[in-house]
Every structure is written in C-alpha cells, then in structure tokens.
Length: 482
Image 1 (cartoon, rainbow, N blue to C red):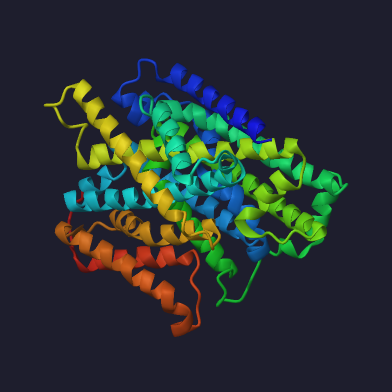
Image 2 (image 1 turned 120 degrees about the horizontal axis):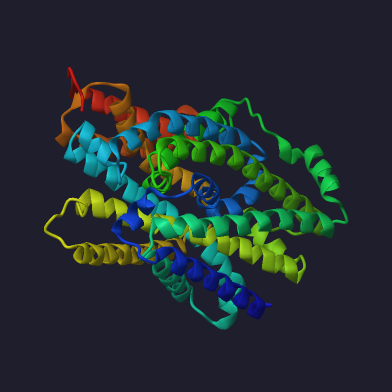
C-alpha cells in the first residue's frame, strides 16, 4: 500500500512540474509578481478555492464537527459578507493605485513606518499560518507513509519544501494560477468520493447518508448563549472580519486577484469564489458528520484532526486510502506555493524595494528574489518542525487564534486609512500595532476567569478596533489625503 501511495505522490509531482515548465517559459520578475496581468478570472476563482481551503480545512473541519457541529456554517456566511467588502471596497483601491504589494497603500496613505509595519504583520501571519497548513498534511504523510521507510520527519519536511521551492522559483504567480486549478480539482474530487465511500461502507446511498446526518445531533447551527465561543453572532462577525483580514488584507490571496487584467475581472473572480466556497465548506461538514457516524458505529475512538486519515487509510478500502492521499497532497501544495510567492513578493517590494532599484539589472533583481525565496522556504522548515511538538489541539483552531492576533493590526490600519481622512504620526504606528495584539493576547488568556466570557473569532475584531483607536490617538486632522 505504501508503494502505491509513493507512486501516486511521484506522478502527482511530475504533473505539477510539467505545468510549471509550460507556464514559466519566458517568465520574468513581473510574471513572478503579477502574472503580467493576464490571468483569466475564472481560473483564478477556481484555483483560489484550493488555496483558501488547504490541508487545515481538509483535515480539521471534518474533525471539528464533534466539537462545533455545523456552527461553522455561520462563520462561512460571515466569510461571504467579508468577501463583498473586499469586492466593493478594497479591490477598487488596490487597482486604482496599481499596486504590486497591497501594503504599498499604507505608505501612500500614512508613511514608510506604516508600510513596513503592515508588511511585517503579513510576513509574520503568513509564515505562521502557511507553515501550520503544511504541517497538518506533512505529519499525516509522515505517519502513514514515510515513517514505514524510516524517513525522519525533518527530512520529509525538507523534501516537500524543496519540491515546492523548485516549482515556484521561476514562474511565481503565473505558475501558481494554473497549479492551484489542478490541485483544487483533485481536492474536491477526493472530498466527494470519500463521502460516497463512507456511505457505501455503511451500506447506504449518499441520499440515505445525508438523511442520517440531518437527523443527527451534529447539524446544530445556532447557539444563543452569549458566553459561549459558538454563539451565533460571534461566528458571523468573526467570519466576516476573518475573510476581510485573511483574504482582503493578505498579499497571497490579493496577489492572485491583482493578476487579473482589470478590476471587473477581479471582482467577478471574487464573487464566484465566495459563492462556491460556501457550498464546499458545507460538503466538508457533511463529510465530518459522516465520519463521526461511521466511527461511532465501528467503535473507533479517534477524534479531531486524526479522524479523517485514520478512517480513510486504516478502515476503508485501499482505493479510499489512495483517494484520500491524493486529496491531501492537493491540499498541501496550495498551502505553500502561494505563500512562498507572496512572502517573497512582500519582502522584495516592501523591504528591499526591488521594483524601484534602478541601479540593479534585471538579472541581479532575479538573483536577489531567488535568495529571498529560498530563505522563506528554510524558515518554513524551521517553523513546521517547531509545530511538531504541539499536536494536542484542533489545528484550525490554532490557525484562527494566530490570525486573530497577527491580522488585527492590519485590519485596524486599513480600516483607519479607508474610513477616515486623518493623518497619523507615522513613527508611532509600530508601537500601536504592537500594543494592540499584546492586549488581546492577555485578554484571550484570562477572559474566562476575569469576565466569564470566552473569545472566539471576534477577538480579531477587538484587535482591529484597539489598533484603530490607537491610531486615532496619534492622529490629527488633514484637509486632503493622497
């Protein structure tokens, strides 16, 4: 079985490199950063599904059903509301300014300290978040495949990052637009097929499985207890601001949108993506409920992130195991390729100013970009190995907790820039942007004992609000803004 999985992995990787070869020919720095503004909007929309979901969704959302039931659908509805803010507020601003890095907006609006602060928080957020997304996939492949060959976890991590580095190094966003499309197809196919195979393993049709799920206790959506993390308004509000922050204020996701030829194409892409994502997340929850029903019937006591791989690989047919691994690998690569590209872009543009270095030849700019790209790949390796020691929690929960702390300053900075006409004392912006997450981190640790209140996704909103208020304190009136 492990040999079959190995050859599936090899074949999949070779297909990715074929796409890389075809898309990266004659690629230059502009191809890497913006795809030469030629990406078809419908291809971007479809590929973004895989990039948005990642291995965390593939594993943790089904595993989350036992703890949160279907309350996550309210968060997904909040995502949709946030995407509409991105479509009609943020994207027109980005296209109007013709940005490569979206954090260039902060320099135009406030100054260089704000610009660097915004980009730094993206670098921090995306490094931690993308590493976590990769970790959850690599740890499963390590447990069920590579460990049988005696390959240490650290070497497995290096192998995957080396492969991802190779196929993103030259083409960048121009390549990723197309590889994400392939990976989204495999991921969604695996999702549907796994649901069908779980139903068949219980001698049910898919319709019967759906009926059993709907009558179960797993389909609770609304929780009205305001002190609960799962309270309905926390889910909607948190989901809205998570999507604004983790998509609209995130270089990786916006870089793909900015590769479309114009604002109308980009808006069509985002609207299509947001509607499709709603139904895809619902399918993941249905799968999670089906897995728990199967586990209860078969006496399987595994829960959480390990539930899906345990059932797919150890309790269903060998074909189901192969399908699961294909879906899992498809979830891995979008977690890393876009992240590496966007981190390289943000650091190269926001900190090294490669787009403005007239004293650099195109060849030298490319060399510097390659060095930055390799550095972030090595950084991923280190962070993933660090995560190896923390596996006692739903990883999607950790992901959103990290996002609530690290994306808050970005939310506050962009909100202040777009909603007010005030000027800030730019040199004090880093101080405000450090204090706000620190306060939220302390509150998150102690809110239950202090106030009998548990934060969930709305912690991000509070973080952004504190940043906004801090900026208000260090600001003054201005007649005009840039």
